[in-house]
Image (cartoon, rainbow, N blue to C red; front, side, top):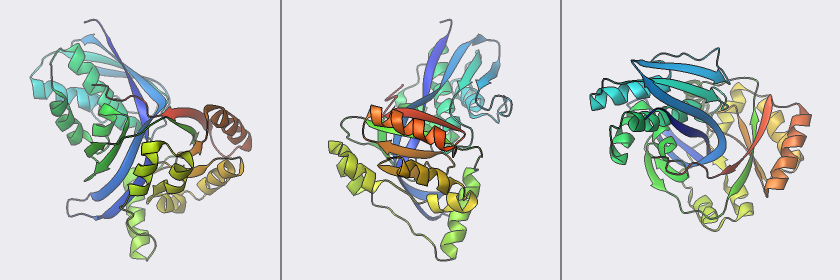
Length: 297
């Protein structure tokens, strides 16, 4: 095989409930993931060792050694399978760095898929899931895409029955947020009596089953949003602009600072995106339907 190309879609959290801090340093999560059609592209080609070249979003800031999850994923796959083969990874990024869209995690999942094919190592889905969980909480979902319920620290997945497609507008902030920092802010705010664990996504899951857009809009939720806004108050302007210009719902994505907006149709999303760009409250604005990228393995 001369080259393998994998599309790596971003994820958003339609529901994100954050439980108390556990003894192992993680939080119990109840989350509903959905992959969306904003994606990175990864190509793996035969080589003597494992290397990475990055183009696009964050290319000059991201590491290209084992600190990058894509390189770490390929390295861990080689170690697990005992292969001596290498791979030249070329990553074209569109997903913002530290944006709450699992850009690093989806790149890691893409590297696992690409190198498993390139090296013909033949790992099963279960084996890839095990490697993915060791790399990060979001990587197992990114390995499959679609829509899923995540529990534990997010790595325990149950497919979610959905119908139809959702149309999203994705507003990229001109700043970054570190996920661990946002978790610490969640804990700090709760210690001060602000916020609690929303662990019941059942109303959202019921709305997704019949693709009731209005009900989906009512039941979108993110326990981390208050913390993200505490750290980046200017995101409130972005959320309010989206609602003022007709979004059915507005939400900080994951740990932020990216904001996502639910639109009724593809045309509605296009119009909303144009208005958000004109508002000047985001660095960039994209549209993307979901679910995307289901079961890339």
